[in-house]
Length: 375
Image (cartoon, rainbow, N blue to C red; front, side, top):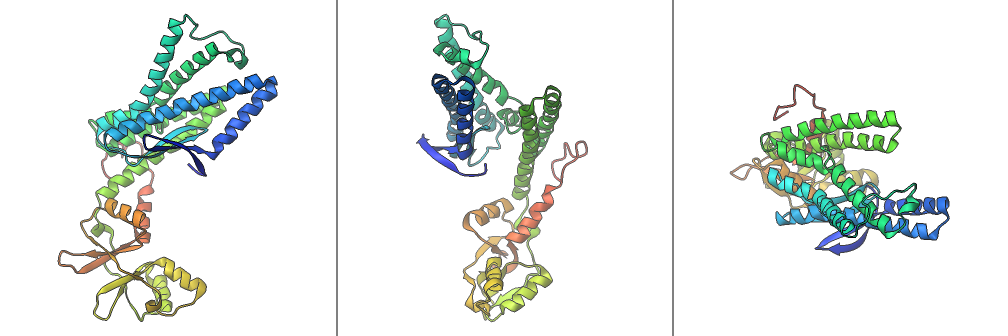
């Protein structure tokens, strides 16, 4: 989600945050309520409804988070926004049963809340769905219980729609993954979700349901993004550093001028470099950021005046997924690839990595690639 989020509290070690746009939604709803009915009492009930609704959403997200915790998966935080809640898990397990349990836990929380309220309504002899003409008719304790019941049933059903980003999409993928490769399962789930999105969009246009139209577009693009993420992770985990490293790389020494580095960049397209000493030992790197800094400020002449000491070494058999995490978490611009005997046989930097990943963004066809495991 874009923009600033504000921390409300921390429960079970998981921060709960509120997206700034949620405040605008609350102010808008309360303003419309007061404008239509001129009632402070009504505004108070509307505020109470909003609080209860998002409390139910928070409990839904904690269903995911606490179930994930059972499998040793941490949750960074839970963010609430006008379009719902999001529990940001550090990882999504590939084991079908684990993903299924985590995904279904949220909807089951809403079902449990609805069941509890239904029992309370039944024991008190109250109507499950009271007769009302407008929202004002629900501004009473009975109406409050009924509305919370309906809201939780709606959340339960809506989240079971078999399309990403709803929980139903992940449940569907988990079930498909029992028999299919995870990439294939995600692709099938993506196409099912997109077919549903098209159906929702057509129905929305026919019935002038603009909110449903927006949701259908969101489902279409989110389904594609989920597939691309899984495909990328699969490729990263099944491709080694040696498969994409640059073998014929330029060696830079301490007396190399930045003018020559810029010319090398223009000629070869290399963005980051290893620095060698007189004994042909790697002693550091020149990241692209340093070159850009010299171009802008022109305050140094040679590499000896500005380079980054130290270098990260990796084996050619290292999976790209492992290196990707290292580059992201540690801010590494370039790594030296070492053979078993310790010789540097290649380099891999952020730009080459990024160019390789962009090649994976080609759209997939519907029939010819549906059940292929690798592209």
